[in-house]
Image (cartoon, rainbow, N blue to C red; front, top):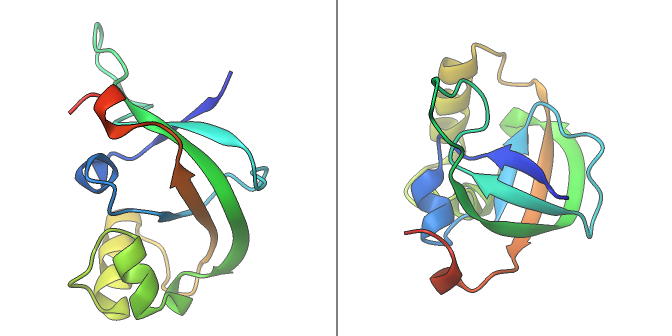
Length: 120
């Protein structure tokens, strides 16, 4: 049974398939070939609220790197084509309250489901 990975901050990017890379402060156990359910929100659900599965993804690459090592190309792959690296790093550091050089797990993935099979 695949694990659930939340994409609460980038739900639209998952829905429109513009996101193929994500950065996490965990998920160190992932390896290429692992399958994960992309969900809207996995934790902090209100009583009676149900998890919404967006699609399934297959991990193609994982590596650790400093958050501020993100490239302009990876900003685009994160689903933010108009961002420069400083914009992306600023968004993450303000949301999580972490330093810009914090080590993250850079996770590259591919979609393995037909978009028509996933909720809009």
